[in-house]
Length: 107
Image 1 (cartoon, one colour):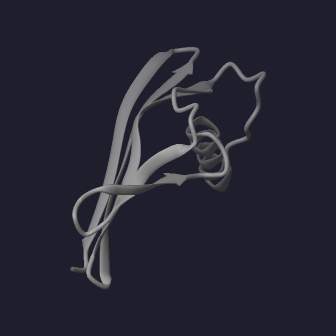
Image 2 (cartoon, one colour):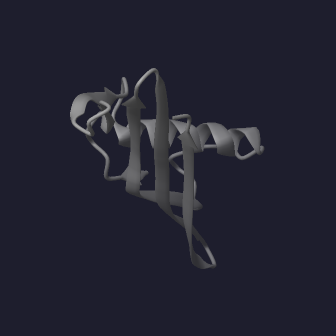
């Protein structure tokens, strides 16, 4: 289960003057995107995904954003994904914060 991130807007595009010109939208909600991504990655690692399992992974979206900026004929971007993951099983609950970011400046 993933909490937070019900909207589809994950960022914006700015022109050379720093003014926002458009939103960056994804086809599903941020919650659905993260849930599908986590499911895919756990399945790749060999885990069986089931709603009936006593082992649970809960995720909270702290931040999922990107920004694209343009200057002249070039563009750059900055993206961040900050997730709080909780792993719950018979022996207890374990918590892990995962933060990934990327920045490209081509101008």
